[in-house]
View (cartoon, rainbow, N blue to C red):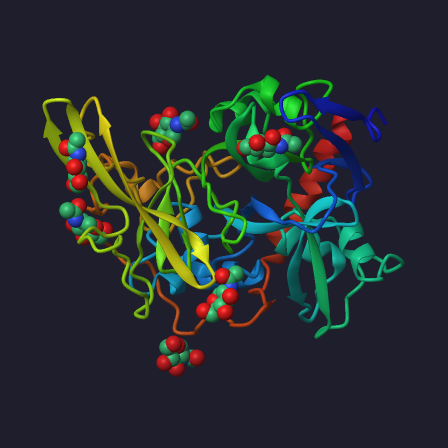
Length: 425
Ligand SMILES: *[C@@H]1O[C@H](CO)[C@@H](O)[C@H](O)[C@H]1NC(C)=O
Ligand SMILES: *[C@@H]1O[C@H](CO)[C@@H](O)[C@H](O)[C@H]1NC(C)=O
Ligand SMILES: *[C@@H]1O[C@H](CO)[C@@H](O)[C@H](O)[C@H]1NC(C)=O
Ligand SMILES: *[C@@H]1O[C@H](CO)[C@@H](O)[C@H](O)[C@H]1NC(C)=O
Ligand SMILES: *[C@@H]1O[C@H](CO)[C@@H](O)[C@H](O)[C@H]1NC(C)=O
Ligand SMILES: *[C@@H]1O[C@H](CO)[C@@H](O)[C@H](O)[C@H]1NC(C)=O
């Protein structure tokens, strides 16, 4: 097999050493994952690219990854403030970005906070390839749980809880000295590196550098780190949201869901405003002024435009810190443009399921003109339709449960994956 083994490369821009780890897929083919060595105990923010293996409620996807439904929606520019948003059903095959805390464990960056409660008939292979859609291999899950000797296709004891190690990298939250957040992307059948680069508006060279690739070739099952342009924060170390970073075109909720920060689409400056998700948020005025977090007031003067803005400075010791900044600018800025929020999709656009960019509208929406970003609150068109809403509530707690898997579909797809992989060799 002509696989790169433990190749080491240095990326000049961030001076970080990367190693390519090799993992054995169920069909005996090695898949590569980009990993980042680390030391210390700091964690950072990253994104997981996840393809739903079944129709799932927003709250179920969030529970699977131990995240908050609103945070999941915000990371995908889906309307997180809509009533009942957490109970919307997302279609099987949909690709979403899942926000994750990237820790430092055993000297490499990985996400180690996800726990999965085994259901009847689950095997290491179905959990790895089905439920977690290839983000972890059955070997990795086995090793992380003292089950290395267990046959990946043997039923597990239902009721036991598995730690699911998930791949993530941060590379100092920058790429070529610009703020970036990294998406762990499982290469799908039919993907090519140039297409992945085009969809994520980056270059083949950048993807090759970040992933220490010798050639622009990736195989299905490989996990690539894709840098996404982002807005960085400058909150102090004492802030619990120190290091907050928001991918272009998306939102992040912080300060106990009382503050929402967005990035883009115009300038890549972080922009935070009060969020109205919980009823118990403190006042967010700047000092003795009447201006609220996010407010910008402009006064044209003969010398230029006197701009004062009230900005968010991090969640410090339970306090939403804010500061009033006043300065002269050559011109008055226009109204702030927010990233457009969409309704959660109800169908998957099959032409792009293997690599759906965030902006790809679902077929139901494809005929409508996408309204330009509006200000200050994104406004949706009048044809607001609710997708099917389940009567059950999502499971709460940190241990996730998953809906039952569409087994024939999943087994067929992994059979095809193996066939294609063998045919490449
Ligand atoms: C990480 O990024 C910060 C600013 O974004 C920079 O000051 C620092 O030098 C970088 N560290 C490394 C190791 O590249
Ligand atoms: C940010 O996203 C917008 C579209 O949402 C795009 O037009 C813009 O080029 C992106 N900026 C960067 C730096 O990628
Ligand atoms: C100040 O911000 C609040 C909340 O974001 C908004 O409702 C209000 O219109 C803003 N006022 C001005 C003058 O921009
Ligand atoms: C700019 O506005 C602030 C308050 O809005 C005011 O205190 C300050 O004097 C103004 N500066 C100029 C140069 O007009
Ligand atoms: C946080 O707040 C508590 C009570 O208000 C105070 O005793 C403590 O010193 C504060 N800690 C920091 C780091 O500011
Ligand atoms: C679902 O949640 C709502 C409100 O959180 C609650 O009133 C209702 O009883 C729950 N239903 C079930 C079936 O758990």
